[in-house]
Image 1 (cartoon, helix red, strand yellow):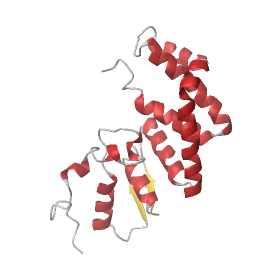
Image 2 (cartoon, rainbow, N blue to C red; image 1 turned 60 degrees about the horizontal axis):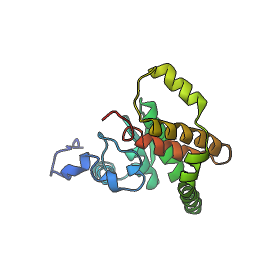
Image 3 (cartoon, rainbow, N blue to C red; image 1 turned 45 degrees about the vertical axis):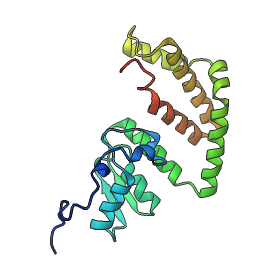
Image 4 (cartoon, rainbow, N blue to C red; image 1 turned 90 degrees about the horizontal axis):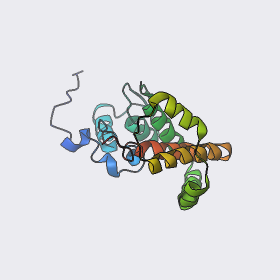
Length: 189
């Protein structure tokens, strides 16, 4: 049997190996990742080199494009990822893809209701004192956020903890949404 040649017949579109296409894909766009790639890239590689595979391992999973794409097709995927933030992103996505269609619809409804209540929550929820203390202990007087943005992050942390009591997955997705935006709302530009 001949060894597979990744470069034979130029099977890939140049943009496949970048995050450019994934920015517009459901689930994959949840957390932008410079080193990411598209779900279509995963599918092209799987179809060409492993069409009969029922289990695949991704040794550097990043934001989970490969495990998520394969799980969506009913293919088992083991993965490794050293970055704890990326592991959080992956497990959050996989928790959603594992839901039945009707459960995903109910989750989408809860997300919409949460989005609608966001302005009220940001006005009425107290900032999380534990996160404030941890942040101060780590960064001292350094300012990485405007006062308003920092206050909102602390309030969202409190809200996520409250949501976690009754709806852990919704809480998890709120935390993921905040994580996905935290650099953009910071002063680290």
